[in-house]
Image (cartoon, rainbow, N blue to C red; front, side, top):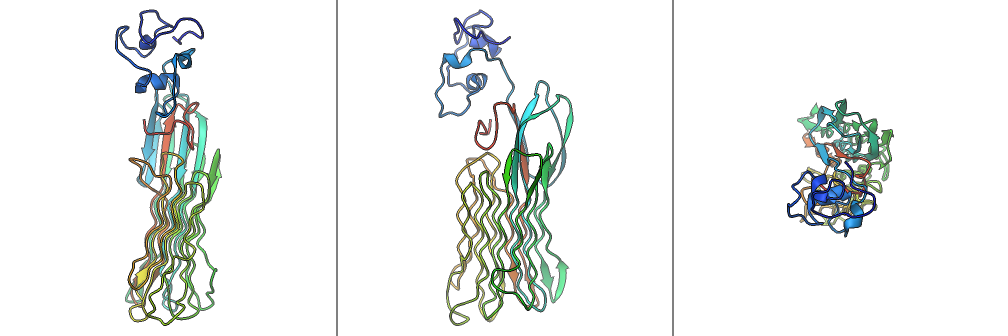
Amino acid sequence: MPLVISGPISMGGSVTGQSINLELTKAATDTISLNDTDARRLALIIEDQTTISLNDFYGKQLITFGQEQYTAPGTYYWVCPEGITSVSVVCIGGGGGGDAGSDLIGVGGGGGGGSLAYRNNVTTIPGETYTIVVGAGGIGQMTVNKVTTQSSTPGGASSAFSCVAGGGANGSRGTVQVVIGSQNASGGQISGVYTAGYAGGFGGTIDTTTYGFRPPGGGGAAGYAGVGGYGGRGRRATGSPTTSVSFSGDAAATNGGGGGGGGAGYTNSVTRLGTGAAGGGVGIYGYGPTGAGGVGGSATQTATAGADGSTSIGNSAFGAGGGGGVGGDNRSGNPGISGAVRIIWPGIVRQFPSTNVINV
């Protein structure tokens, strides 16, 4: 039964409705403190930095806390546990695969980052089965001896409880008319029923107007409060073809905990081989720092990927777009990173982006 809403209340004791121990199904004489994990859950205050007191326990009753996460591409079936009548969920779409261009224009665009959408306090029915889908990362193009053995593909959408986070588009294919700023691969979009969400970052564009043929970076995954960073543009060289220059370009992430865009790669005028760096991903444990944009490559430095956003201990990052590729008869683009879905409960007190979303 719930604890009393007023009057005497204590950590121990043998009076039902007045004993926190008894409400937690412990013995009346068990040793317990306000900061014990199960006591905080009963008070519905589980963030460690928040101070609680006995007053926070009035009217509370034992509620089961839990979570389930899906981080590999595929379709799953979640059975709602007994006693759980609400959940909150976050979905991250897969990143798009990078392209490596046509035989005529041997450089392709970076893939777009996956979107992020969350939905809070969703009503659930204990024992009911719900379908969960995790989107795969897109495939990077691969061409060997002028034969394309695999084409770039977009990232897959992730969904749960009618909340949908779309995957990023695959990298664009170059043509003779390519100009700076054209043919971005779009970031994933959100749809369905959601509380909030944001689009993934655009993949980097290509520029073949003169020597250089820089492979663009991939787009960053969306954050909990803003879109993902754009991939670095494959800018042309500004000096001689062998000049050691950096091409970080448009790789900066936006605010909002999203992943940074990947830096554009560097290639010399002889081999013309290389790939742009991937965008940054985003985690499933709620709002955190925004990922920085990747640094462009040079003759002495490899391009770096966009930093992951919303990172925390034990967190992994999802939804990054793959960098574009460049080359002659043989060339390839990087694959995108798969999406993810995380469910937490009870949804009435655990809600994205930052309310009791820690890993418990």
